[in-house]
Length: 323
Ligand code: ADP
Ligand code: MG
Image 1 (cartoon, helix red, strand yellow):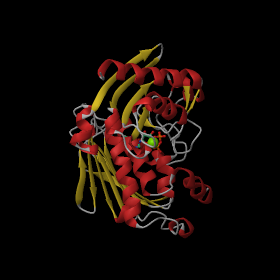
Image 2 (image 1 turned 120 degrees about the vertical axis):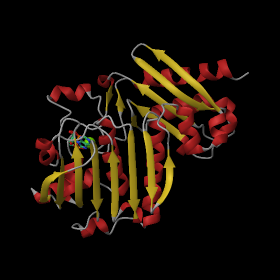
Image 3 (image 1 turned 60 degrees about the horizontal axis):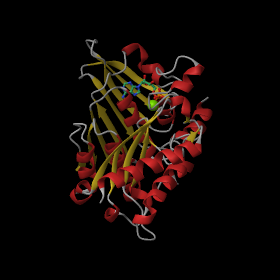
């Protein structure tokens, strides 16, 4: 099973960024309102995620690191009703199979918290400890036991760039969570977490961008879309300012990107792309999130409907708010 775990880990754990992503998603699933992410050497030697979420009950700490251990799904049919960011119970198992992990966690009702150390999938130490409610996970020396994978990690500066992009997306997707992101002892991002999306845009893209966004709120049947779209003059030279979240998860989707870009087409210069931060809430049964191991892509039940929905939402917003 050790080998199987290491191989399977490759799907979920590509590098520091995917580790951070999975752990931060766990924090959000645990109801955290404050999440600190610290990395060193691009996250290759050190990643620390600290949250004030629900914590893991003492008797569940060990099992949380077993493959397919998830507290978030009881039945297979639940796959149709996924509201949490995690659901496959693979992240902790995969990460701990290929690194050295320490976790300190405590639920509100427990007197003492739990400390667990696990390296290469093997439990090294477990004991009671005193700590605050919530969870802190430290991941050291990623792929220390998989040289073939370690070799393919990029330079620290490149890996930390990936993590920075991710943290920006997290901040934009979860304005209700206060994020602090520290890279090599320097605070790179610190959001208020007061739920104001415009404030998140300010932290991530700066003042000019924050002041050039139009609020969008559009509903049709079971689709609900909210967020901010940039005025045409805010357009950028690439697609990296196009942010789509579906049920709280950052997603790349061609149909949506095309619909929004088409709606902007008559208002943008050739080769320019819109800036937007849009959150779609849909019944989980309308999207299949299980097409990509890192859950970065989705397949919609009805692409035409989704295209029209996004196109109309953007056109109407611009018609109403731009003269
Ligand atoms: P998944 O998120 O798919 O359930 P993970 O491997 O990411 O699987 O996590 C396993 C389980 O560990 C989760 O279902 C959850 O119960 C628990 N867990 C992980 N991280 C946290 C956290 N930060 N706070 C509270 N519980 C957590
Ligand atoms: Mg998870």
